[in-house]
Amino acid sequence: MPMNHVHRKLCSSEKWASQVASVLPEALNGQELGESVLEIGPGFGATTRVLVDLVPKLTAVEIDEASTALLHKEFGDRATIRQGDGAALPFEDGTFSSVVCFTMLHHVPTVARQDAIFAEAHRVLRPGGLFFATDSQLSFRFRLLHIGDTMNVLDASTLPGRLATAGFTGVEVDHEPKRRVKFSATKPG
Image (cartoon, rainbow, N blue to C red; front, side, top):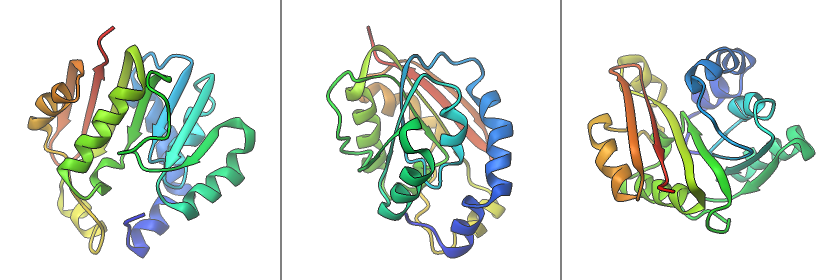
């Protein structure tokens, strides 16, 4: 996981987990995720703790081996945890009703790798499936937290085109500069 020590400490803290638990349901804003959800990049599992109680079947893919081991230990049989790369997902086409990513895309080192994640999300979604994500936007505090980290902030203005290139339709982007970007898109049915 491309994070400095301070960032890792924050994202693994109870304070962060509590904050995520209080804002994630609102961020989802009634999105219908369906019965089989894939979470890409759960990190230390703060978002996974919320999702596991919201959806019937949750699968999470985490690239970092140590974090994957911690997630296995915490979630046991409550969720399927796989070690893997969101840009090369280890699942069959059309496996999931929705794919979600929360505050992780800025840790993907290049736009091309982010686009590969978008394409993989599209591939593993069923027709009519939802891709939903949120991520932080550039601010002074955000920049300080990421000293020594991989930090490739999403350009909200390019998301509609990038998601369309991956095959998505119905793209909606909600952008709050210096705070967050939230987007949803659908795999044509």
